[in-house]
Length: 305
Ligand code: CP
Ligand code: NVA
Image (tube, rainbow, N blue to C red; front, side, top):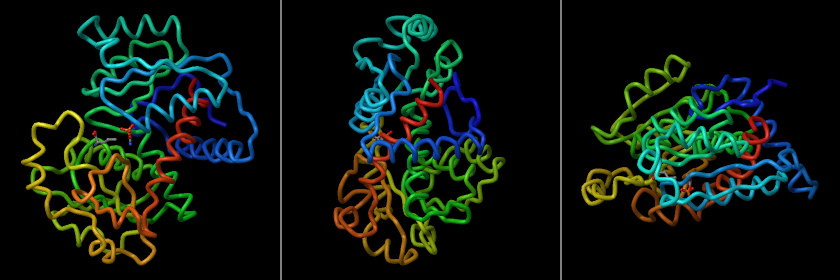
């Protein structure tokens, strides 16, 4: 057992392969205990502060429910409550919260805020989405792939769409777990070069193309996310036009392996990046993926807090 107490989860890149394995094993255990109705109050009397500067359904409900199931308590802090860096500096938020709570979860815009919060905090900080990264999502995604395929090494995950925060964290997580990636995105919407460099240094086998059909060839997993992320709303019309040929529909799904699974972090914009038909098809695992946010984040909290 590796001691992860006090460890932050800012990026999957900061975790060792063994730590990712340990998170998955713990998630599997906690999921099994939940299904058999046994209590696991590992975080009894502990408190998680949840800072939200963007909207959320899955993240908020799974972290809060997760804390309750682990015997602890979560406090929701809305965008108007803290106003990170505006009402008071990030380091003062970190220093104050560290005196009261046992862990901090944050969803914000700039990833630098998450990094600063983690540096200044005496309690673990969990990144619950920034403009750059979404580590809780990608850990859950690969955990879900493992549940479905019972193997990870050597699989191919095809990401179709915007080279965004979800794509970046998938790159880091696939690198750790020896899953190959192909990314299909329009010119100018590729993932960050810096992330690509770091993920490749970590062993990621990666192909980037502008052609979705080429990307999904021989894929075990097709993944997509919204074309317009939170904070980019003013670009919506332009993006609808640019990404038009990057829709995950049944024609595209049929070009992958016959046992391909289709994933989406949700929320989905139906008939933009994915069709309703694909979400409702036998290939889709999106609701198992959403459920697993609960189990994987419980594992992260139980190990670090
Ligand atoms: N996938 C995800 O993070 O969903 P929410 O934005 O609803 O939390
Ligand atoms: N890329 C999306 C993910 C939402 C969970 C966003 O940042 O809005």
